[in-house]
Length: 337
Image: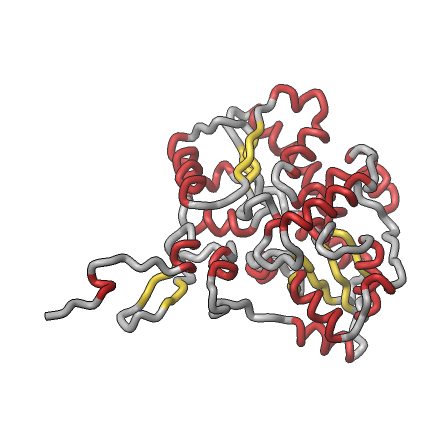
């Protein structure tokens, strides 16, 4: 009897291979399925699939419909926007205003609250005798902990993500507006479902499509300057080491006593390491920055630009960013409030 070829030879499937938590498998008919109880929404399968068979449920039409109806819609834009489009960040914000958004607020502004709160929490936890603490701003990592490494929960920071704080800044400024988070992250859709202050999520890819569809030319857009400028460290949140660097910059001299490490890609190897830290209660660092995407949020699955191109242009823009200290910027912000 002639046996089917795949009965003796393993044929790798790109999406299965890309999934770090084995959430994708075939049924009896050979059809791939994603197990929601295991999925951490990292988006690795999204980019690995050569057929475009995996896609997100978009909220673009809902957002545009509300804008057309004249409703107030505020965009809160992730720090990873820097370098996504080959123009100034002010022109990108101007293009969003041209789409019809009532206001544009940088999530980097919320990142400064995350830095402040996380830094104080870290010092407090270490003084209490806890061996280490991880960051909490990556929603994919939070899904990983909740679904696969529950033993890590006591070590995860309780501080809100930059999106969490930025959404509340937006609601305070525009109480009757809907808030749209714009970024490169698939897992933010899941985080937004749990956050009453965030109404919609839109990706950079979707932004590019909307601008193209409305024939809005970025290079010709009227620049829109923020009323509040976020500092360089807050914009740097989106790249690997950014959160860690911002927290250490905030702590100043106290940071010298803290050994910080980063996990900037959730794959089978790094997930194994995190399991070991949770089980033993020990880690090679006291402060661990965890991001699901390689290179940080700038490598998110729904980015618009190529990562290497983005990095080059992003570095140039970061050099022009506000170089005040985070503490100074926080003082100014709270004085304005």
